[in-house]
Length: 297
Image (cartoon, rainbow, N blue to C red; front, side, top):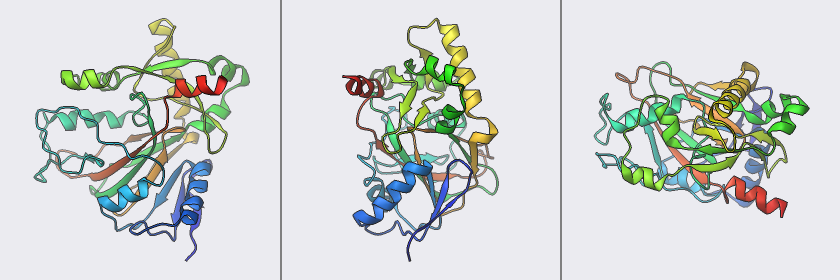
């Protein structure tokens, strides 16, 4: 059966049918998916009976799959292989994490609007999230189209923003929720990094705001002024017209473009119900500031 595409939001987010991600994929099949991805920025694949090996194999079509960040938690026991990130509230024995679990506290940062791994020197290109076990209610994910937000800004405002550079840090985003319990190993491995505020998407040629809760300050600006601008842009970019809310079903796989979207998890009864999702993250090629410099050379 030939694949089909149905847009689930007027601006972005499309559902793909007729694709089985559990087996090998030809270049022609992936080229069709890549074109749809470049246009819609977020793709949903329903009813995918896949394991972690299948997910990693599909992810690798998009680029190099990143290893899970080493935060050096006190409990280093992992549930999953190192190229799959555990986006869940259960421990390696299948029990719901306790209230003081470092992983639980760190992952509360997913409730904030963000784009994955903008706090790394080479950020994420895309992320793929597979729903394995879900709560009875809640735990949805919202996505925001940062291309549409950029397009909606007045031309004069776009001109003011185009050349700005922002410092990103995961320690900033987690501190917003009161979590600062990071090891010295993690702090040494994840120093603040600089990323451009406005990106041009290589697949579509469209420009997009590049924001995240990790965005701490605008380089060269007074801290208060930079913070105010970042807050203003985030509020603008997450207005209702730019946002799609995805209600998960078990077997869903969603892939989103971190270069031109933001996302956030929505709350659920996480002390009493399990929510188990497995994420793979594909790395971009180069730091965004370095890319801009190279393109301008």
